[in-house]
Length: 281
Length: 130
Ligand code: SF4
Ligand code: SF4
Image (cartoon, rainbow over all chains, first blue to last red; front, side):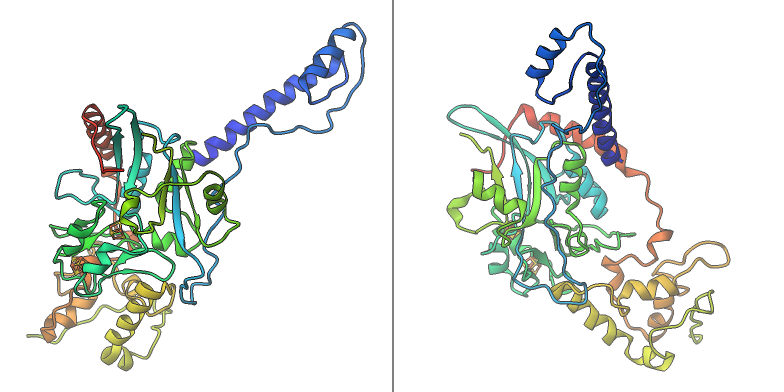
């Protein structure tokens, strides 16, 4: 829905631009460079010149950075040729906006409560620098670590990193010991305390097991985007980019190469799949 | 205990992926195999998944209601109760097709709730260490 609003916006911009060009056309030759246009318009103020608008150049369309998606046929195994990750630009993340959180809750059938024992896959966090008082707003979820502490401590093998870098809990073998919750430095995991009914097809979840952000693995496998990224883009905040970190030509890799990205608690050397920009002291 | 009556799909043109005898004895093997492949290898859309069983075999009864997994009217529970075999599948998986699950309530109230929590937390900013 939001997407189509965006489209309408762009069309509206184009329309008014076309209007402007057409009006200008009456008084002079149309060139895209505004300086030239003004100059000629002034000179030919009274002359009637017939012109044709040849091309309208779109100035403000931001390129879609979420083009790196899974193309794996669903009957083939995942492989380590890909590593799915996310890049979050905290400067673009709007304070007070919870679109990503809402979308996640909706996609995974979560209730959206925020008490200490409630499930949260993603939460908005405000960081405050002790030295300058500068505040940064950012979404925080499982960071999809390569060397994941949750996997290290899991006694059953339920916590695992899929070949393509997505951290998952196999709840068929999770015994609910909650060791992983203790080990995760990002407080990313939640324990389900109560019976659950009517789960979403792509988000089975139940009492007695641990769960966390799974990077919307079903959507990703089907060539889609994580729900949070989709929502952020639809809001036109564009603070989140999803893509393949192992593909040097994916927008996320290009962006990281150009501008860099930080890992939260990089001192732990977990090689997280989620990176942040704009974390200023 | 009376012998269970098992719900047959109303649409008689639908065919099971395997003959009835085979499914009776070995359905759990199909489901288990599919489970591990999907979970660990990301293989999806194979016909052997649990949700496919549910999609055909769980339908509203004559009263228009779906019998939940606790009921012996439910396709899975009908036999499992008779055979006294406890199944855990539906602690995590929905016991009925998605199209019969009503979802509307929470989205908007949920959003408001979150906005409030967020407003409260922004006055006392805190988070993880960078
Ligand atoms: S962020 Fe936490 S839950 Fe996610 S992979 Fe790392 S240790 Fe595991
Ligand atoms: S709660 Fe489950 S996933 Fe976490 S460590 Fe225990 S068995 Fe592993």
